[in-house]
Length: 271
Image (tube, rainbow, N blue to C red; front, side, top):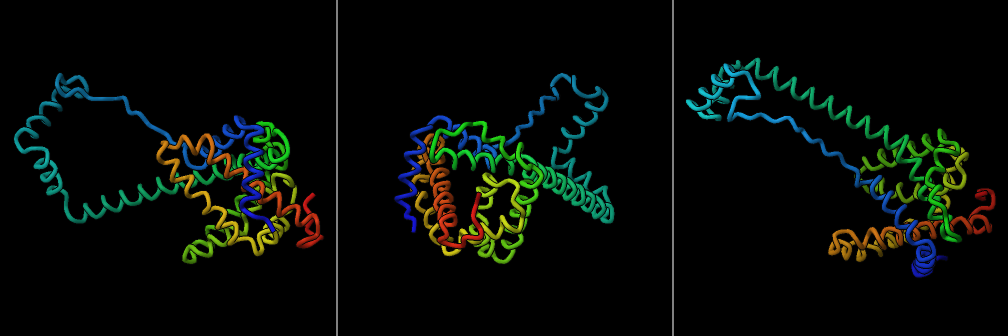
């Protein structure tokens, strides 16, 4: 049976052996999974002081109307001129447009997650597993794209989909399934050609009786993450995240060795 102290001790040794590469990979994973954002800068501006941005006649009419009624008065007057049926139509159109935009954004996000982030995640987790025993190369990040890419995309997509559906049942089942499928990404990092059913069954087998212990292992890092808040995230970047990723990789390595040694089921050995 593994212990938190044993896993963390191995993680610390592995981190110190290849520190800067581990920090860089952990930072990259953090950005991929939650730190990427886009800032749209609308630089087009209107100078109402000298009428350069709109037609002079239109600007004068609008300015006089606003001066006479105030901006709120102009909006109220415009609203009063729209009949009730027309208001309902406008509201309906706005709702449809918003829903369409949200669906398009969701589809784009899911596509990026399935075809880019998930394969990269497999390569990143492979890096931390490899780094447990020797200095891993950053080139491992591309492993998911160079080895059975299609199979990795399908299995990781189904993993996330199943967890999502289970989470609809009052959240708790989703959390349980997330721990049950926790090892799939690591399994694919070493066996990218593994069939879907085998990968799911093997992860379930590895986490049998281990879900609560893994949950407590995750909780043991809460103090570190709280402390990191006081350093504006710098502690997380340069220590906590790579330390935790190595610890999770050490957990996978231990459970894999148990299976390969016949402690669980000899027939499900990882190559």
